Picture: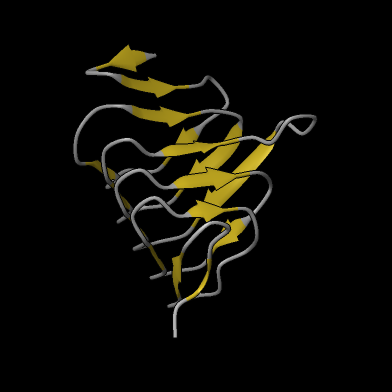
Amino acid sequence: MMLAQVSIGDPVVMHPGVYIVHGQVVLDGIVEIHPGVVISPWVTIGLKAGNVVGPTVREGVNIGTGAKLIGPIDVGTGAMIGANAVVVSDVPEGTTAVGVPAAKSE
């Protein structure tokens, strides 16, 4: 489905209460996004080459502008993903992840 420059692949599961701030968002692969997630512009959430399973994004996660969440990872409840971060591994609950590749912010 394509709406206001947002591309959502067929296998994506988005629960009620997900807020997409603005366009230029791509969601693809076997991805699940739980309630209360905020997705900023220019975000990509999807699969990694050779694996159709994408991220699971838990409740209350805030994803900054330009961030990429790639592959079969789990982003824990209440986590924050910094602008332009590239997340390729799990992010624990309540953690802030920044950088390329993303790591826990101290």
